[in-house]
Length: 162
Image 1: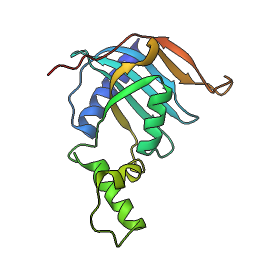
Image 2 (image 1 turned 120 degrees about the horizontal axis):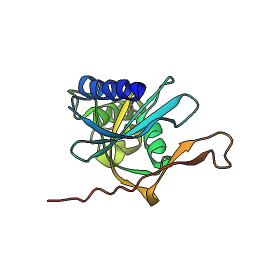
Image 3 (image 1 turned 120 degrees about the vertical axis):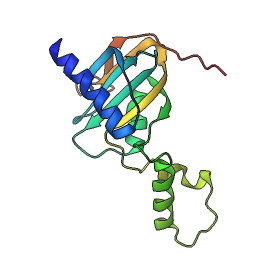
Image 4 (image 1 turned 90 degrees about the vertical axis):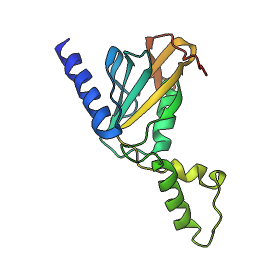
C-alpha cells in the first residue's frame, strides 16, 4: 500500500514536471506491469474519470514503440501527450527527420511525415486512453506463446461529448 502511494505521487509529479498536466490519481488499475524486457507501464484512473497510462523504460523509446506497446496492452489511445511546452513536438521531430532523408523537398505534408513522427524520442510517455479493448489489459510475458498474457480485467470506454 505504501509503495503504491509513493508510485502514485511519483506519477502525479512526473506528469506535472515533464508533461505540464496536473493529474490526481483516483485509482491505480495496473502498477508497473511489464511491456518489454526493460519497460513498464502503469495504468490509472484520474479524479476526472480519465484513463491514462504512464510508460517508461531503461532503454530509449520512440513514439512508434509506445504506440505498439499501447496496442499490445489491449488499449486504444486517444492522445499521446507531448513534452511540457512543446505542443508540436512530434511534428517538429518528424519534419527534422524527414528533411535529413529528403533535404531538397520543400512542400512537406502531414502524410509525408507520418512515419518520421514515430521516430521521435518518447521516454517516459503519458498516453490518454479512450478504450480498453475487450475489457482485458495484457502484460508482456516471455514464457507466453504470443509473449503477452492477460493481466487485469477492466472495462472502460470514454464517451465523446461535444
